[in-house]
Image (cartoon, rainbow, N blue to C red; front, side):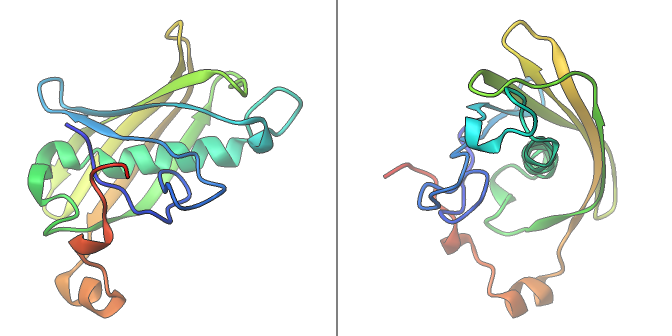
Length: 158
């Protein structure tokens, strides 16, 4: 199931010139969120290697989007979430200009808190980055104050 995105998002926004333009999907059967993307050379750290901050941003998005496995159609239509904290472990360099697969899932739910985990892997399934996060549901009054609404999100590419 394809997930919605924000047009101006750094990770998935189609109207953001510097976006990775990553499309996210929810696999309810396997209880994961996933995406395949290519990290362009403009996001390299050392020559030929993706910058760690870009990888952390990509993983952060996946870890947050993992709550869609539980929230299903409520995700960004009725409920909004933010990352409370996150840890990242860089295992191997992640090359630029090669497709990577990002996968994330829910480890535990405690009230409004979701403990999520995920990874970035190469096409040969070599894991290059792992991470964990605590994701929290934003109170309705805060989403209203910030002007967050389901209408801000897009499901279909234009």
